[in-house]
Image 1 (cartoon, one colour):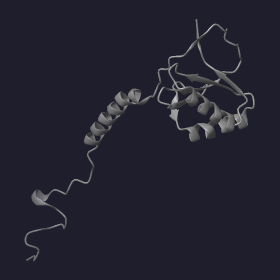
Image 2: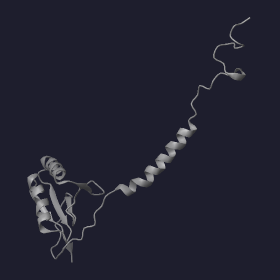
Image 3: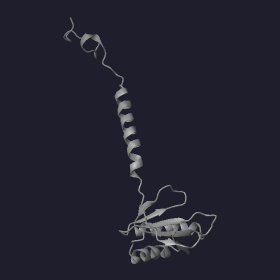
Image 4: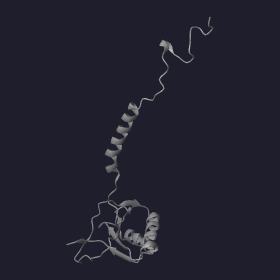
Length: 148
């Protein structure tokens, strides 16, 4: 006569089966695949690029062995930095631009920086960008133009 109310074997549920101890990973895989697809679709949309309408010039482009660092200035004064090994320019603040250029100039004294300012940018915004470049101790600075 057992006093356990008809239960034997301790942890058995109804029907005499042990509870399921395995985790079903199929829903987890489904959720991960959906997240992967979402990230793959949205990643190309997150790249920033600026359309800059450059002024025109008759001068020929200088040839160099090293690609320059390009600082773009949009009409609203927004700055972007494109390093030689980067595919897209990255939006930066003036302080961040100065810090990154100072680090680059410390490693390579011969680094060239090209300022690509939109044709409609106020002159003071271009000068402000060039001041940031000068504070970063970059000696070789040029202005980008469109060839005629």
